Image 1 (spheres, one colour):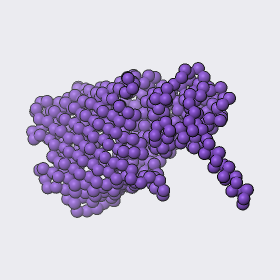
Image 2 (cartoon, rainbow over the protein chains, first blue to last red):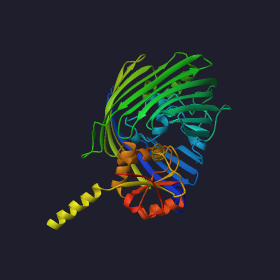
Image 3 (cartoon, each protein chain N blue to C red):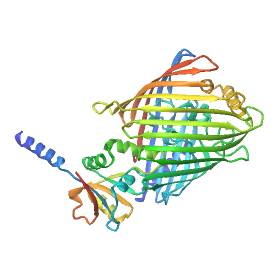
Length: 358
Length: 127
C-alpha cells in the first residue's frame, strides 16, 4: 500500500508543472448476485480500481492498480510508458491489454464503463477463466492513418505470453514469446471492422498442476462495431482458437446490442441491452484441459461452469444517474451442454470518481 | 420584478444568438471540416481546448459531430481511461487565446465574438 501511495504522490507532484497533465480515477462496484445452482443471493464488494494517467509532451505513463476481492489482493493491471510523437507510429512498453478485438481494450478493468455487469466469458480475464490473452507484458507498436477517407489502424504486440500459465506480472515461466496483431478500418468515426490474431506458445508448468505440457494456441478474431456515444451500441466479436499440438480447437464470441431508451430528466440515461454469447471447446484440447484443472484446483467454481460448452442469453439494463454512477440489472440464462442449464440474476451499483483532473 | 424578467429574457435571447468559432494558431493553413472532426474525436493528435462557456461547446459539438456535449465528454473520458489521450481542457477565452497562440498543435472552440480581434485564425463559425 505504501508503494501505491508513493507512486500516486509522485504523479501529483509531477503534474504541478504547466506542461504536464495528470488524471486520477477510482472506480468500482457493489453488487448482489443470485445463482440458481447455489440457490443463494449474496452481497459483494466488487473489485476497486485506481487509474492514473500522466502525460508530458509525447510521453504518456499509465498506471492501473486493481484491488481484487475477497483477499484485497493488489495487482498492477496496466503499467506502461507510451511514446506517441506520430499518429502512425507509437511505441508502448510495459503491461497492457493485448490487441485482440475491440471491447477488451475499450473496457479494460473499468466495469462501470460497460453497459453489461461483467465481461462476456470469451474475453474475460485469465484468472476468471477467460481463454484469450487478456494481459501482456512486453512491447507494442501501433498507429492510425486516414487513407481515402477511411481510418486504417494496426497494432503489433510482442509479449511474455499467456498469463494463464506462461507468464505473470513480473516475469515469464517459459522461453517463448507470444505475438498478437490487429488490423482494422474505421468506415465512420464510431464504427470499426477488425481482424486480430495471436500465436501463443506456452509451457504449462504450473506448481499447482505439478506437470509440464507444451501447448500452442493460434487465435483468430474478428470484430464488427458501431458504438456511438449516447446512441446505438453494437459490438460483435468472434474468436477461433486452435491448439496446434493436440490439433483440437475452440470457438466463441458475443454480440452486444444496447440503445438509450430514455435520456435526460432526473436520470442521465436508461439503456436496455441484450447480450448473446457462445463458447465451445473441442474435447481433448490440452490447453483447455489444463485451464479447467487449474480452475478446479483453485476452486473457481463459477468460472469452471462458465468454461464448458455453453450458449448464454443475457437481458438487462443500465440505469445511469450520471456519467459517474449507474445501476445495472441483468438476468442470464446459460444453455450448457455437459452440465444442467443455469441462470443467474445480478444487481450492480457501479461508480467512477474523477479523483484528480478529469 | 418586471426588470428581472426583462433581464432574464435579454440573457436568454443573447444565448440563443451565440456562435462558436473553431480557431487555430495563425501559422496553420486551412483545415477541412472532416479533419476538424477527426481532431475533436482524438483520431488526429492535437491539443483540443474547449470554452468554459458550455453553451458554445454544445453548439459546436452537436453541429459538427452529431452528439451532445455531455456524450462528447463521456467519449473522451472513456478514451482517456483506455490510455488514448488527455481529456480536452476547458479554459476561459483569454487563457485559450494565449495557449493557442503559443501552441501550433492546439485547436479551440471559443465564443465567436471573443476571437474577432484575437489574432487567431478562425477556421469556421457555427451558430
